[in-house]
Length: 329
Image 1 (tube, rainbow, N blue to C red):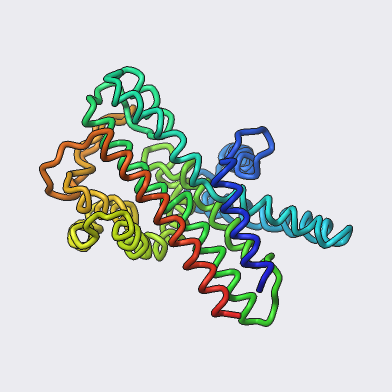
Image 2: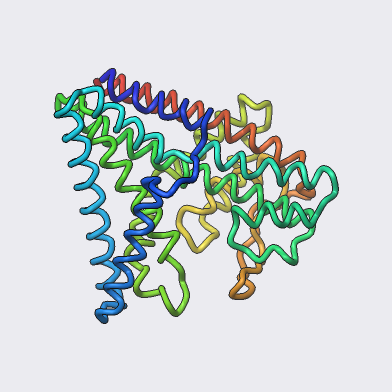
């Protein structure tokens, strides 16, 4: 039990202080290269429809887990600490909390100094929308939305699947961290597949279907748990969590995605503003529904408060995960 709890705690600390540095052999980048390579091979072979996408998902999940298991077990054969160090590295690489906040801070500073051009350039680093038409309010809204959405995708979901794998291992009488990291890695594969091929356009609507659906399935429970986590985080932050919960219970299913609007709608409610709405992407205008009905105009002060809410919610989620693992033991 100690190993499973220690790995997730120290992985969180590493992410908190170091972040997610970009380098060529980052595990998620390697997964991305694998997706690109397998996608080209499958599509050139004529497997461009749903079955091709299913094969892509199976290949990436199986190969990723097989490579992880081979390296982890091989290093454990050399010395237990070598294997444990590798496991800590993989766990740390699957968390992306600090980078989310680090990329938002320049947006806050640019808005506070009135440099809209710089704010657009900075927010373009973390969102897929066409930022050329955004005013200060639009940039602020985009920042709030990406903080809420990526709290789930980049942190709560990998944490949740680590917990699931860890609890299964403990209930089976094992203290090995490997099942927890297998579940966590499986989620990162699904998430990367969704970001690379899960588009609802002519090119990927069929081929990316399996990856997108797997991502929806694996985010389903974490998205809903995020309401409880954010509720506690808002309470600790001195906000009004009931306002967020009321809006979330009303608006959380308005998006096409079954998961995307949960954290966003809570955010809209707790800050008494509106998020979502018609959004311009490089491929055109998408008529998204509005979340929340507040009349507050979002600005840098709200983004700064949102980063605090995200940080506190992350700590709450971490200690909740560790508590669940201890109870399972």
